[in-house]
Length: 103
Image (cartoon, rainbow, N blue to C red; front, side):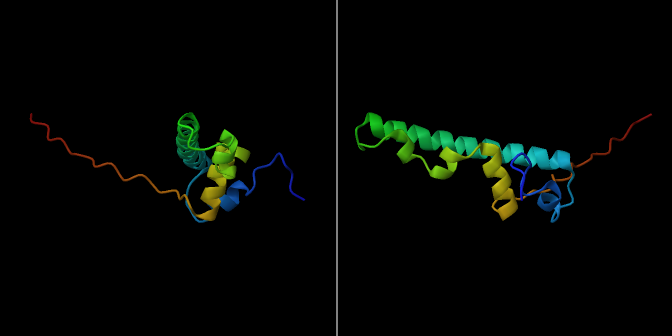
């Protein structure tokens, strides 16, 4: 039985296909949650606009996708990472320029 206080899927399962540490996983999930929050805010703004223009006669919550209504952004980001909708990538290696020192 899964404990509701624990993250599912567990961290090792989230990172098994990647060579990243927990810190990098936290950063990836935070960035994913930021994307989810932006999507929710866009959806909410569209719903408010439709209601104010009287294009629909529904409550605002019915115009927002249930996934965004019923779950926290972090939970959605973790689920999307686990399902492969989001993926972690290593940052591009920074180009190092050699400086020639004249004496």
